[in-house]
Image 1: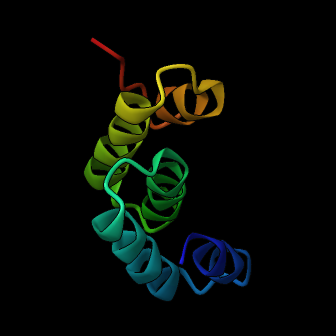
Image 2: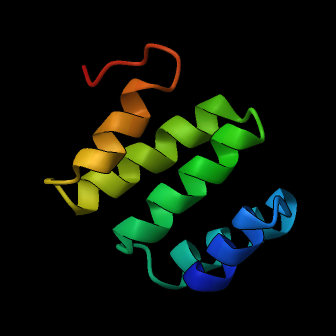
Length: 81
């Protein structure tokens, strides 16, 4: 589901990508990469609060995740505090 969600994201089929990635994290809640990918899609859909929470979930499950910290930092000035 994560990989198919990424393919749909690349094809700009964002709603469909969001649905698949949401399913992926529902099935495996500690899947950090799927959480980050979901955050990227939510950010593209201008769902900034949801994107922030998805990035934070990814970081919760993978503490050393520089790409995710970068995405969170670019999300409009949200900090980590």
